[in-house]
Length: 302
Image (tube, rainbow, N blue to C red; front, side, top):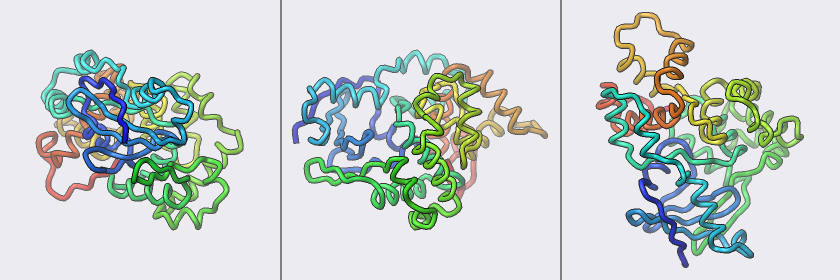
C-alpha cells in the first residue's frame, strides 16, 4: 500500500480518534482504518508525519495533494493548537487536562454523519455508540475497500429515510430509531438543508438543530462543535457536568443547566469546545480520579 506523507505537528492521531467525538475508526496493523465521508482511508502516524492511503474509488483522477488536503482538513491540522491551548483558563482541572490531551484535535466531521451519530448517542456509553455506528454502517452503508481492509461508509440520509424504525431498531438504537428516521426524512426531503444551516449564527444554529427529532442541547452543541466547527460550543454531558460541579462549583447547593451553560460560555470563551473535549477525554480516560475524584464504576456516557 502506497502511503502519502502529511506533515502533522502537534497532533496525536490515536488520542484524537479515541476521544469520543467520532466512533467508527478501527485499529488496523500499525494504524487505523475508517472513512472520511465516502472515502475509505488507512492512517498511521510516525512522530510528526501522518501516513495515509485512500480508496482507489475516490482517488481516480485525484492528484495526491488533493487527497492530502482531504485528510488534513478532516483532522483540522490547520488549527493553531498551541494558541488554542494558551487561551484556556489557568486552573488545576484545565491544566491537568491540557497536559494529558496534548495533540488532541477537533475533527471536522461530515454534517449528516455527525448529526445522525449523536442522535444515536443519547444516554449511551462510548462503546455502545461505536457498536451502533458499526451496525448502521454494516447494515445500510456502501462498501469500500482499501488494500485488504473492508470499510463501510456511513449511510446517507436518503438511505436511512427509505427504511423503517423497526429495521433501525435491529441496529440496537431502541427508542432512538424513530428520532433518527424522522430526522433523516427531513434531511432527505430537503426540508432541512444541513449545508445552508452553516450560514446561521451560533444562537440560530442551536435553535434550528434543537428543532430536529432527537436533538437536545447537548447533541446540538456536539453537532455545532464537530460538524460546524463552532469552537465555542460547549457540550455538557455526564462527565463534564461532574467536572464542573466538583472542580468549579464545589460548594454550590443549587446549580442548574442554565447556570452551567452561562458559566462555560463566559469562563472558557471562544475555544470552549476544545476545552470541553480535553476535560471530557481526561476525565473519561483517568476514570475521573485525577479530574474529579470519581468512584469506580462510573458509566462513560457521551
